[in-house]
Amino acid sequence: MLEHVLRLKSARARVVVTGCLTKIHREGLGRFAGIDIVQPDSMERLDELIQASVPFGATRTDRVVWKSVPPSAGFLMRFLHSGRPALQRQIMRFLKFLPPGMIKTIRPDLLPRIRRAGLPDARRVLVSDADIGPGVFHLEVSQGCLGVCAYCVFKFVWGKIMSRPLDEILAEFAAARRQGYKLFSLDAQDLGAYGQDIGQNVVDLLRALFHQSGDYRIILHDFNPQWFIRYFSELEELFVGYRAKIVYLDLPLQSGSSRILAAMRRPYTAEQVLPLIRRLKRVLPDLAIEIDIMVGFPGENEADFQETKNFLAALREEKSIFLWLTDYTDRPRTESSRMPDKISPDVKDGRMQQLKALADQYDFYQGDGVSVIHRGMQQALLSDQGIL
Image (cartoon, rainbow, N blue to C red):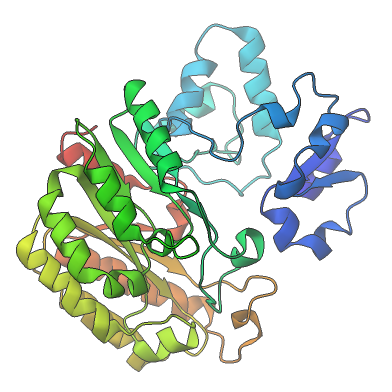
Protein backbone atom coordinates (compact mmCIF):
# COMPACT_ATOMS: atom_id res chain seq x y z
CA MET A 1 0.00 0.00 0.00
CA LEU A 2 2.73 2.49 0.98
CA GLU A 3 4.75 1.76 -2.15
CA HIS A 4 1.60 2.33 -4.20
CA VAL A 5 0.96 5.71 -2.52
CA LEU A 6 4.58 6.84 -2.93
CA ARG A 7 4.43 6.09 -6.64
CA LEU A 8 1.26 8.11 -7.11
CA LYS A 9 1.93 11.14 -4.91
CA SER A 10 2.93 14.48 -6.37
CA ALA A 11 6.44 15.84 -5.91
CA ARG A 12 5.22 18.39 -3.37
CA ALA A 13 3.12 15.97 -1.32
CA ARG A 14 4.26 14.78 2.07
CA VAL A 15 3.51 11.25 3.27
CA VAL A 16 3.06 10.87 7.02
CA VAL A 17 2.70 7.40 8.56
CA THR A 18 1.22 7.17 12.04
CA GLY A 19 -0.84 4.83 14.18
CA CYS A 20 -0.13 1.29 15.36
CA LEU A 21 1.90 0.47 12.25
CA THR A 22 4.75 2.72 13.36
CA LYS A 23 5.42 0.54 16.40
CA ILE A 24 4.57 -2.83 14.91
CA HIS A 25 6.60 -2.45 11.69
CA ARG A 26 9.35 -0.05 12.71
CA GLU A 27 12.04 -1.93 10.79
CA GLY A 28 9.89 -2.37 7.70
CA LEU A 29 9.01 1.32 7.53
CA GLY A 30 12.66 2.25 7.80
CA ARG A 31 13.32 1.06 4.24
CA PHE A 32 11.02 3.68 2.73
CA ALA A 33 12.59 6.96 1.76
CA GLY A 34 10.54 10.13 1.72
CA ILE A 35 8.11 9.39 4.53
CA ASP A 36 7.69 10.96 7.95
CA ILE A 37 6.95 8.56 10.82
CA VAL A 38 4.91 9.86 13.75
CA GLN A 39 4.29 7.41 16.59
CA PRO A 40 0.99 7.59 18.49
CA ASP A 41 2.67 8.94 21.62
CA SER A 42 4.46 11.73 19.68
CA MET A 43 1.58 13.19 17.70
CA GLU A 44 2.67 16.75 18.49
CA ARG A 45 5.25 16.32 15.69
CA LEU A 46 2.37 16.81 13.27
CA ASP A 47 2.27 20.51 14.18
CA GLU A 48 5.58 21.08 12.43
CA LEU A 49 5.10 18.57 9.61
CA ILE A 50 1.79 19.96 8.40
CA GLN A 51 2.25 23.52 9.69
CA ALA A 52 -0.88 23.13 11.75
CA SER A 53 -2.96 26.20 12.47
CA VAL A 54 -4.53 24.34 15.42
CA PRO A 55 -1.91 22.67 17.65
CA PHE A 56 -2.36 18.95 18.12
CA GLY A 57 -2.36 19.41 21.88
CA ALA A 58 -5.47 21.56 21.58
CA THR A 59 -7.48 18.69 20.08
CA ARG A 60 -9.14 15.78 21.88
CA THR A 61 -7.21 12.71 20.87
CA ASP A 62 -6.95 10.57 23.98
CA ARG A 63 -10.66 9.73 24.06
CA VAL A 64 -11.93 10.34 20.58
CA VAL A 65 -15.67 9.98 20.26
CA TRP A 66 -17.35 9.49 16.94
CA LYS A 67 -20.60 8.32 15.45
CA SER A 68 -20.28 5.10 13.53
CA VAL A 69 -21.33 5.62 9.95
CA PRO A 70 -23.19 3.48 7.42
CA PRO A 71 -21.07 1.22 5.21
CA SER A 72 -18.88 3.47 3.11
CA ALA A 73 -20.00 1.84 -0.12
CA GLY A 74 -23.38 3.45 0.35
CA PHE A 75 -21.89 6.50 2.08
CA LEU A 76 -19.58 7.32 -0.82
CA MET A 77 -22.22 6.52 -3.40
CA ARG A 78 -24.44 9.22 -1.97
CA PHE A 79 -21.65 11.76 -2.45
CA LEU A 80 -20.77 10.48 -5.91
CA HIS A 81 -24.36 11.17 -6.93
CA SER A 82 -24.68 14.37 -4.92
CA GLY A 83 -24.22 16.75 -7.84
CA ARG A 84 -21.20 18.36 -6.16
CA PRO A 85 -18.39 18.04 -8.75
CA ALA A 86 -15.55 19.18 -6.48
CA LEU A 87 -16.45 16.60 -3.83
CA GLN A 88 -16.89 13.90 -6.46
CA ARG A 89 -13.42 14.61 -7.84
CA GLN A 90 -11.88 14.37 -4.36
CA ILE A 91 -13.53 10.99 -3.73
CA MET A 92 -12.40 9.66 -7.10
CA ARG A 93 -8.83 10.78 -6.39
CA PHE A 94 -8.94 9.03 -3.02
CA LEU A 95 -10.24 5.77 -4.48
CA LYS A 96 -7.49 5.70 -7.10
CA PHE A 97 -4.93 5.43 -4.30
CA LEU A 98 -6.33 2.05 -3.29
CA PRO A 99 -4.25 -0.78 -4.79
CA PRO A 100 -6.28 -3.05 -7.12
CA GLY A 101 -7.62 -6.11 -5.32
CA MET A 102 -6.75 -4.84 -1.85
CA ILE A 103 -10.18 -3.68 -0.77
CA LYS A 104 -13.20 -5.93 -0.86
CA THR A 105 -16.74 -4.66 -0.68
CA ILE A 106 -19.41 -6.30 1.41
CA ARG A 107 -22.08 -4.56 -0.64
CA PRO A 108 -22.02 -6.45 -3.96
CA ASP A 109 -25.46 -5.05 -4.69
CA LEU A 110 -23.83 -1.64 -5.13
CA LEU A 111 -21.27 -2.72 -7.71
CA PRO A 112 -23.41 -1.90 -10.78
CA ARG A 113 -23.98 1.61 -9.44
CA ILE A 114 -20.29 1.96 -8.59
CA ARG A 115 -19.35 1.01 -12.13
CA ARG A 116 -21.86 3.48 -13.56
CA ALA A 117 -20.21 6.15 -11.41
CA GLY A 118 -16.97 5.50 -13.27
CA LEU A 119 -14.95 3.52 -10.73
CA PRO A 120 -12.69 0.80 -12.15
CA ASP A 121 -14.00 -2.69 -11.50
CA ALA A 122 -10.76 -3.69 -9.78
CA ARG A 123 -11.03 -0.92 -7.20
CA ARG A 124 -14.15 -1.57 -5.23
CA VAL A 125 -15.37 0.92 -2.71
CA LEU A 126 -13.67 0.96 0.65
CA VAL A 127 -15.89 -0.20 3.49
CA SER A 128 -15.35 1.73 6.70
CA ASP A 129 -15.68 0.59 10.27
CA ALA A 130 -19.44 0.55 10.36
CA ASP A 131 -19.12 -1.42 13.60
CA ILE A 132 -22.54 -1.54 15.20
CA GLY A 133 -24.55 1.18 13.60
CA PRO A 134 -25.08 4.91 13.79
CA GLY A 135 -25.22 6.89 17.00
CA VAL A 136 -22.80 4.81 19.05
CA PHE A 137 -20.74 6.68 21.63
CA HIS A 138 -17.35 5.01 22.03
CA LEU A 139 -16.40 5.46 25.67
CA GLU A 140 -12.78 4.57 26.28
CA VAL A 141 -12.25 3.07 29.73
CA SER A 142 -8.65 1.88 29.46
CA GLN A 143 -5.71 1.26 27.18
CA GLY A 144 -3.39 -1.73 27.16
CA CYS A 145 -3.78 -5.08 28.86
CA LEU A 146 -2.16 -7.52 31.27
CA GLY A 147 -1.93 -10.39 28.79
CA VAL A 148 1.12 -12.08 27.30
CA CYS A 149 -0.68 -13.71 24.36
CA ALA A 150 1.76 -15.38 22.00
CA TYR A 151 0.06 -14.10 18.84
CA CYS A 152 -0.73 -10.51 19.86
CA VAL A 153 1.16 -7.61 18.35
CA PHE A 154 -0.91 -4.87 19.94
CA LYS A 155 0.69 -5.30 23.35
CA PHE A 156 3.79 -3.73 21.77
CA VAL A 157 1.66 -0.74 20.80
CA TRP A 158 -0.49 -0.20 23.89
CA GLY A 159 1.70 -1.67 26.65
CA LYS A 160 0.45 -2.46 30.14
CA ILE A 161 -3.01 -1.49 31.17
CA MET A 162 -3.75 2.16 32.00
CA SER A 163 -7.26 2.54 33.38
CA ARG A 164 -9.07 5.84 33.41
CA PRO A 165 -10.33 6.99 36.81
CA LEU A 166 -13.91 5.93 37.37
CA ASP A 167 -15.17 9.44 38.11
CA GLU A 168 -13.69 10.66 34.81
CA ILE A 169 -15.49 7.89 32.88
CA LEU A 170 -18.77 8.65 34.63
CA ALA A 171 -18.43 12.36 33.86
CA GLU A 172 -17.91 11.65 30.15
CA PHE A 173 -20.77 9.15 30.18
CA ALA A 174 -23.09 11.77 31.69
CA ALA A 175 -21.94 14.42 29.20
CA ALA A 176 -22.64 12.10 26.28
CA ARG A 177 -26.09 11.29 27.57
CA ARG A 178 -26.84 15.01 27.84
CA GLN A 179 -25.91 15.21 24.15
CA GLY A 180 -28.57 12.62 23.40
CA TYR A 181 -26.53 9.42 23.09
CA LYS A 182 -28.31 6.26 24.18
CA LEU A 183 -26.02 3.54 22.84
CA PHE A 184 -22.51 3.14 24.28
CA SER A 185 -19.55 0.93 23.49
CA LEU A 186 -17.02 0.47 26.29
CA ASP A 187 -13.71 0.57 24.45
CA ALA A 188 -10.60 -1.17 25.79
CA GLN A 189 -8.05 -3.68 24.59
CA ASP A 190 -9.21 -5.86 27.49
CA LEU A 191 -12.36 -4.59 29.16
CA GLY A 192 -12.24 -7.25 31.85
CA ALA A 193 -8.86 -6.00 33.08
CA TYR A 194 -10.23 -2.55 33.84
CA GLY A 195 -9.07 -1.15 37.16
CA GLN A 196 -6.37 -3.71 37.95
CA ASP A 197 -3.79 -0.91 37.99
CA ILE A 198 -5.80 1.54 40.12
CA GLY A 199 -7.22 -0.69 42.84
CA GLN A 200 -10.58 -1.27 41.19
CA ASN A 201 -12.08 -3.83 38.81
CA VAL A 202 -14.55 -4.23 35.98
CA VAL A 203 -17.41 -5.00 38.37
CA ASP A 204 -16.90 -1.58 39.99
CA LEU A 205 -17.02 0.01 36.52
CA LEU A 206 -20.17 -1.77 35.36
CA ARG A 207 -21.98 -1.30 38.64
CA ALA A 208 -21.29 2.45 38.56
CA LEU A 209 -22.49 2.74 34.96
CA PHE A 210 -25.58 0.58 35.40
CA HIS A 211 -26.59 2.55 38.48
CA GLN A 212 -27.03 5.65 36.33
CA SER A 213 -30.69 6.25 35.62
CA GLY A 214 -32.08 6.84 32.16
CA ASP A 215 -32.64 5.23 28.79
CA TYR A 216 -29.33 3.84 27.47
CA ARG A 217 -27.67 0.54 26.54
CA ILE A 218 -24.08 -0.65 26.73
CA ILE A 219 -21.96 -2.95 24.55
CA LEU A 220 -19.30 -4.98 26.37
CA HIS A 221 -16.47 -5.49 23.88
CA ASP A 222 -13.29 -7.56 24.36
CA PHE A 223 -14.08 -9.08 27.74
CA ASN A 224 -11.31 -11.65 28.05
CA PRO A 225 -12.48 -14.93 29.61
CA GLN A 226 -10.07 -14.95 32.56
CA TRP A 227 -11.91 -11.94 34.00
CA PHE A 228 -15.29 -13.44 33.14
CA ILE A 229 -14.21 -16.46 35.21
CA ARG A 230 -12.73 -14.45 38.09
CA TYR A 231 -15.73 -12.16 38.58
CA PHE A 232 -18.49 -14.43 37.34
CA SER A 233 -20.70 -14.43 40.44
CA GLU A 234 -20.76 -10.64 40.66
CA LEU A 235 -21.16 -10.27 36.90
CA GLU A 236 -24.06 -12.71 36.84
CA GLU A 237 -25.84 -10.70 39.51
CA LEU A 238 -25.23 -7.45 37.61
CA PHE A 239 -26.28 -8.89 34.26
CA VAL A 240 -29.51 -10.27 35.70
CA GLY A 241 -30.30 -7.03 37.48
CA TYR A 242 -29.51 -4.81 34.51
CA ARG A 243 -30.27 -7.03 31.51
CA ALA A 244 -32.12 -4.22 29.76
CA LYS A 245 -28.95 -2.11 29.79
CA ILE A 246 -26.78 -4.67 27.93
CA VAL A 247 -26.64 -5.04 24.16
CA TYR A 248 -24.20 -7.93 24.04
CA LEU A 249 -21.11 -9.43 25.67
CA ASP A 250 -17.99 -10.27 23.63
CA LEU A 251 -15.84 -13.17 24.92
CA PRO A 252 -12.64 -13.70 22.86
CA LEU A 253 -12.34 -17.42 23.61
CA GLN A 254 -9.96 -18.06 20.64
CA SER A 255 -10.05 -21.86 20.84
CA GLY A 256 -12.08 -24.71 22.28
CA SER A 257 -8.85 -26.65 22.83
CA SER A 258 -7.22 -26.05 26.20
CA ARG A 259 -3.93 -27.33 24.79
CA ILE A 260 -3.98 -24.63 22.14
CA LEU A 261 -5.07 -22.00 24.66
CA ALA A 262 -1.99 -22.85 26.73
CA ALA A 263 0.20 -22.51 23.64
CA MET A 264 -1.44 -19.14 22.98
CA ARG A 265 -0.55 -18.11 26.57
CA ARG A 266 -4.22 -17.60 27.36
CA PRO A 267 -4.68 -17.97 31.16
CA TYR A 268 -7.82 -20.14 31.23
CA THR A 269 -9.17 -23.39 29.84
CA ALA A 270 -12.15 -24.06 27.62
CA GLU A 271 -13.50 -26.31 30.37
CA GLN A 272 -13.64 -23.29 32.71
CA VAL A 273 -15.50 -21.06 30.25
CA LEU A 274 -18.18 -23.32 28.79
CA PRO A 275 -20.16 -24.07 31.97
CA LEU A 276 -20.22 -20.37 32.87
CA ILE A 277 -21.66 -19.40 29.49
CA ARG A 278 -24.30 -22.11 29.82
CA ARG A 279 -25.09 -21.03 33.39
CA LEU A 280 -25.49 -17.41 32.27
CA LYS A 281 -27.71 -18.52 29.41
CA ARG A 282 -29.95 -20.46 31.79
CA VAL A 283 -30.85 -17.28 33.66
CA LEU A 284 -30.57 -14.90 30.66
CA PRO A 285 -31.39 -16.93 27.56
CA ASP A 286 -31.76 -13.85 25.35
CA LEU A 287 -28.45 -12.22 26.36
CA ALA A 288 -26.38 -11.98 23.19
CA ILE A 289 -22.87 -13.40 23.54
CA GLU A 290 -20.15 -13.15 20.92
CA ILE A 291 -17.54 -15.92 20.91
CA ASP A 292 -14.35 -15.17 19.00
CA ILE A 293 -12.46 -18.13 17.52
CA MET A 294 -9.01 -18.13 15.92
CA VAL A 295 -8.46 -20.92 13.42
CA GLY A 296 -5.08 -22.42 12.53
CA PHE A 297 -2.83 -21.41 15.42
CA PRO A 298 0.57 -23.12 15.05
CA GLY A 299 0.34 -26.73 16.15
CA GLU A 300 -3.48 -26.92 15.99
CA ASN A 301 -4.16 -30.52 14.98
CA GLU A 302 -7.42 -32.21 14.04
CA ALA A 303 -8.10 -33.23 17.64
CA ASP A 304 -7.70 -29.62 18.78
CA PHE A 305 -10.00 -28.39 16.04
CA GLN A 306 -12.57 -31.04 16.97
CA GLU A 307 -12.56 -29.69 20.53
CA THR A 308 -13.45 -26.25 19.17
CA LYS A 309 -16.31 -27.79 17.21
CA ASN A 310 -17.42 -29.66 20.33
CA PHE A 311 -17.40 -26.39 22.30
CA LEU A 312 -19.71 -24.77 19.77
CA ALA A 313 -21.92 -27.86 19.58
CA ALA A 314 -22.47 -27.59 23.34
CA LEU A 315 -24.07 -24.16 22.70
CA ARG A 316 -26.17 -25.16 19.71
CA GLU A 317 -29.46 -24.87 21.60
CA GLU A 318 -28.70 -21.39 22.93
CA LYS A 319 -30.22 -18.22 21.49
CA SER A 320 -28.34 -15.12 20.33
CA ILE A 321 -24.84 -16.54 19.94
CA PHE A 322 -22.39 -14.70 17.69
CA LEU A 323 -19.48 -16.60 16.17
CA TRP A 324 -16.62 -14.33 15.11
CA LEU A 325 -13.92 -16.14 13.12
CA THR A 326 -10.36 -15.16 12.26
CA ASP A 327 -7.56 -17.23 10.81
CA TYR A 328 -4.17 -17.10 12.45
CA THR A 329 -1.52 -14.94 10.75
CA ASP A 330 2.09 -14.39 11.81
CA ARG A 331 2.68 -10.91 13.23
CA PRO A 332 6.10 -9.29 13.64
CA ARG A 333 7.85 -9.64 17.02
CA THR A 334 5.32 -12.16 18.34
CA GLU A 335 6.23 -15.45 19.99
CA SER A 336 3.87 -17.42 17.76
CA SER A 337 5.57 -16.16 14.58
CA ARG A 338 8.63 -18.17 15.68
CA MET A 339 6.70 -21.32 16.54
CA PRO A 340 7.00 -24.47 14.41
CA ASP A 341 4.15 -26.53 12.93
CA LYS A 342 2.46 -23.74 11.01
CA ILE A 343 -0.93 -24.63 9.50
CA SER A 344 -1.22 -24.37 5.73
CA PRO A 345 -3.60 -21.80 4.20
CA ASP A 346 -5.66 -24.58 2.63
CA VAL A 347 -6.18 -26.32 5.96
CA LYS A 348 -7.05 -23.03 7.67
CA ASP A 349 -9.55 -22.19 4.97
CA GLY A 350 -11.12 -25.63 5.22
CA ARG A 351 -11.52 -25.28 8.96
CA MET A 352 -13.01 -21.80 8.57
CA GLN A 353 -15.58 -23.22 6.16
CA GLN A 354 -16.44 -26.01 8.58
CA LEU A 355 -17.08 -23.53 11.39
CA LYS A 356 -19.19 -21.34 9.14
CA ALA A 357 -21.25 -24.38 8.22
CA LEU A 358 -21.71 -25.19 11.91
CA ALA A 359 -22.76 -21.61 12.58
CA ASP A 360 -25.42 -21.94 9.89
CA GLN A 361 -26.53 -25.28 11.28
CA TYR A 362 -26.76 -23.93 14.84
CA ASP A 363 -28.36 -20.65 13.71
CA PHE A 364 -25.55 -18.52 15.14
CA TYR A 365 -24.93 -14.98 13.93
CA GLN A 366 -21.55 -15.03 12.27
CA GLY A 367 -18.76 -12.91 10.85
CA ASP A 368 -15.13 -13.45 9.89
CA GLY A 369 -11.81 -11.70 9.47
CA VAL A 370 -12.50 -10.94 5.80
CA SER A 371 -15.28 -8.59 6.84
CA VAL A 372 -13.66 -7.52 10.08
CA ILE A 373 -14.22 -3.82 9.33
CA HIS A 374 -17.95 -4.29 9.01
CA ARG A 375 -19.56 -6.41 11.68
CA GLY A 376 -22.79 -7.24 9.96
CA MET A 377 -23.80 -9.67 12.64
CA GLN A 378 -23.94 -6.93 15.28
CA GLN A 379 -26.07 -4.86 12.94
CA ALA A 380 -28.41 -7.81 12.51
CA LEU A 381 -28.77 -8.26 16.27
CA LEU A 382 -29.36 -4.56 16.91
CA SER A 383 -31.93 -4.55 14.13
CA ASP A 384 -33.65 -7.56 15.67
CA GLN A 385 -33.73 -5.75 19.03
CA GLY A 386 -35.21 -2.62 17.45
CA ILE A 387 -32.12 -0.50 18.15
CA LEU A 388 -31.37 0.20 14.49
